Length: 235
Image 1: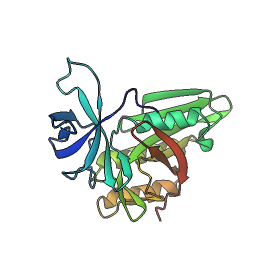
Image 2: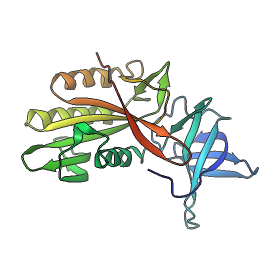
Image 3: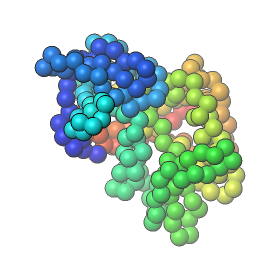
């Protein structure tokens, strides 16, 4: 996925009210940008960090600029926009990068399903194949080469795992796919120290047949692109 126009660089002053961030642009101008991330952004919102913003060009928007990237370590750009992982995984399915999810003729998005009234990110369907339900999660929290999810307690995340297990019990495929938008991660694990319930649920649903996979993206100010499969170590 290429950004439609060059990103604007600046320095993060603060993130607040979940969806807002004050940024001092390289020009010296201070702007308030929309923050498209509902998580805690642990390790990704330190004041003084180098950040990249997109400009919608829409003067009718209260906050025309959106925060897209942050430098979380020297030379490590991290994508914080949680609206992108679904698009990145879809793009990687369509271009053949995600080999495990090939062979489906139809891909539908944001389909309601399950006993707990969820929406699946991607529903893959094709003749002679069981329907494949794919839940995509964005991974930005990392330490010592390990990516962790979630970065805050997530009952919603556990619910999605339970829904996938129900899908598998019904004879269909259920996939939890972790999208890692930073280059310094070599494996993904549940963040048990943050949300023990999520970790326990992940291990249980894997034992019940849910497929867990992780893919890392190349992140730059020009584009974000899935390029490497990573192991998921939940044991």
